[in-house]
Length: 312
Image: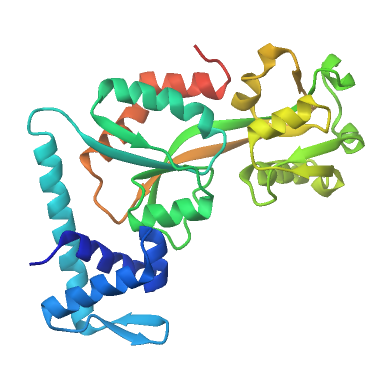
């Protein structure tokens, strides 16, 4: 008898075009993928892939199976969802991958409210790089994702605007700039900075804004790279340097009196953050409920409040 998991492994191998990459995406071993494919081929009594070294290519039989396998997997998923909701309650797991650090401050508010509405939904939030997030979404390992980009080259994903991430410059409260109403952009070259990874959305936004104003971001002296707003804040508070970071992260620490926001004349920093979902796979009932949840006016108000650093 055909097993739905075996079909899922087959479809992931097709999508990844490699048993090794399929194994990584499914978090299983490469021999386990090979075994599942061999089991499927033995059951159907036909070869599904042509194997040449490490590369694979679908046979004619494999090409025929792809749409049928997708239909079968979707049918089983639909049956499970209907049975889970037969008593009027929505149950199941929701995996939301997150690659945008600012979203770490927002998600607890969103998920706690969603959990009150759907108490039988269990939620998992892996924090991963943007590259891993897109791969996991495309493979179906993650249900939804939150990222600071819609650059979906090579990935068939749907995107929904979630919030505008405003970035600010922060300094230790002991820094002279903490006592000033604002500074000029020319003065920024005088200081040291703690930055996120050079490939981060934050670095790209700052670089783009500097270029718009006719300044070279490389003129800033970066003394530390660390991909964590919390670690950046601690380094700033200890006087190691200044940092550009999400407003919602900075606002969490301002009441402690060890951090200050520095206003830079003419500098406006923000980037859009998106909720992402697979554009190829059918959305489950839980996925649809969450997407609808983030689009209702009350949730919009909550998102805007947290993004501005105003928490209850």
